[in-house]
Length: 153
Image 1: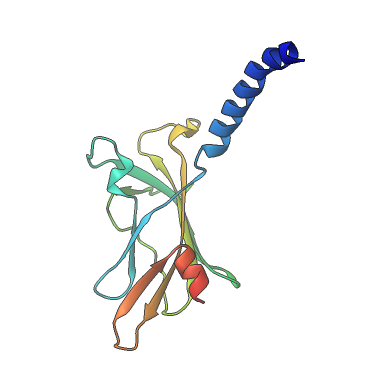
Image 2: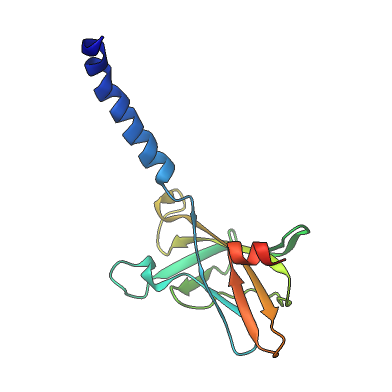
């Protein structure tokens, strides 16, 4: 019995490692969100998206805003647009939507590094995040993100 165990053990370990690596791969990416002076969020691709910390251009193909429990509130499709939408990491994306206080939102967008072919999907990324802007009793605004935003409502 021990001989059979030693024969299949390398196979079991190999399969376990491969499965773990595949399942660990991050499917969604997390954008940075900060409140601007006007109380609206600045949603951007993080600076650390580039290993060498240089400004990189990204082609934004689709932006969307969902209200949790309601559905899509706003979206903008640039995928086959005559005028592409390019941003650099750490630059606020243009969400033409007025976010209200005390409502949980699920925001997201799709990006690709500028200059990549449409058939080269290696730099395609979907960015998603939950957020909520709350107004405190003293009148100041606070940004809640992810689980904190979903649990608050």
